[in-house]
Length: 457
Image (cartoon, rainbow, N blue to C red; front, top):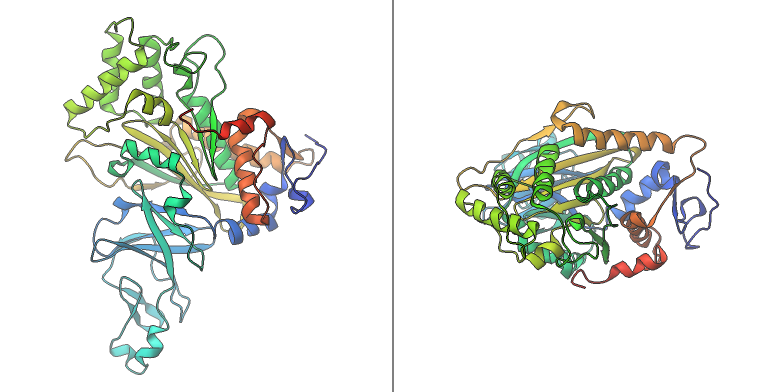
């Protein structure tokens, strides 16, 4: 589709400038833009490296690749977490690969040893060198912090804004769901022949469409979207509410609520656990009081079922659930959908500096039955047709590849956007602030800018 360019702001090169209702394809296929993102965006934002359970004991390490940089997160003897660049400063050789456990870092080419916090160790092979010289050669540290059970790293050379400041107050309300107590149900990693933003934006649309599908015969209302600084929340349970988005007009029947729970659990193997499915089954066979909407009755049944399973279920009021059980984009690379018993998400990053390739890690975490928790292995998948993806996730991956291919066709000039694409446009404007040092617009879609209000409103 050919669109007339009206670049904004002037500081952004014309070929990459955002229009009011379109995004130029150069932001997805231009190698120069991809390199700029690595240098200015991924190096200046907090990035998810792994979850706390990935490094369970002293010396456990996890290699996280962020663009063309390799970072090692390692558990310290005092249970704290440190992160370092995954190379020896003297030799530039990679220290570790993947995950595992070690007592110390070793640079094999010249027999140099480092403690778990990255400081050099002396040994027989190093007696010819002075301790002063060695201490100038410690492993290069990386800022690290934790939230919600995830371990984040920041590649900035100077002290960055804290993770708590980066994640605004509204996002911190997710702590109601005790994400730090959830454990992996499954995790899958796949290389996708698509730009990382194509992958991310496919998840925006797919999560909204799949999870927010209307349970009524009337057309579904547009999902509410709210911006909080760099981040965005989009509601996924709106279809279960009334036409005005309130509990008082909630019209879904017990069968419709149960159908939704069972459909999502079947198609995604996520967001609802075995105890939730028991609650959905009970909801079908129970006539709730006339004054109690079916969704509220399901939540009551789900809590009771979880307690019977022995699960430490989070205490969340119905108002908090309606407000904060939603989809979230944690800028730049993570999208997360949260329910009371489980969460579904993806972390998406560029594969090196190739604008046509990305690494996608999909995961489901959940509150677990005591004694049943174990670290789910990371499944490295072979492509969109890999049966371990399942039909729904496979369809999403194929969509990403198809969109990226269209980007390269001569007749394709830009991606047209509508008000429902607010999360997509918002993230591009936030990126421009980092890439070109320009002010983020508050009115990406005119009236849509009003969605930056609090979720409590």
